[in-house]
Length: 179
Image (cartoon, rainbow, N blue to C red; front, side):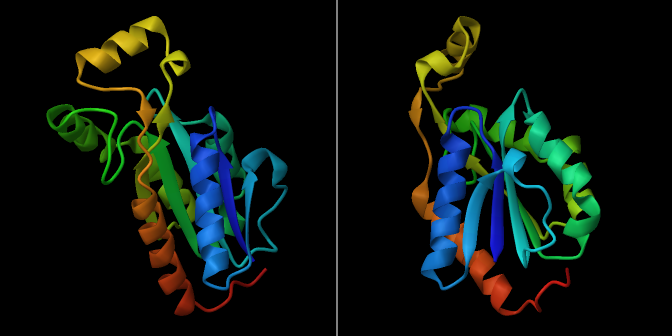
């Protein structure tokens, strides 16, 4: 069984986690998506995919806490990480120039480097999420527009499916984890 654990603020990350779990099931893997707060331990899972929304440049606290608390158990199995924010690998809330600048900053995100090290994750992928005008403060909405951004659903489902497929391929060549 593969666990897709996530922390979501407005539902965008939850939707991506559900899509990843469904894609794994489509390929014949037992998979379940669950909020991190509903997962007591990872010991019974062959592999773990852990994701979080990004707010103010960081994972949500409950996702980081989950990674820290489960670090030892996660080191013993295949782990992948994903983040959902304003910038994804192939989509963005913003225009090209702003996206380029934000991607550069994200590549040096110390928190994600640490979480990846703690968990022994094989990969981290960033996805653009969905944002409604009411999700951000008035100042946030002004900044979004000032930098060429726009509210809406920016999730790229083909990108999510392709990343899930890469995990399926990796699982085919990975021995089962020891609990």
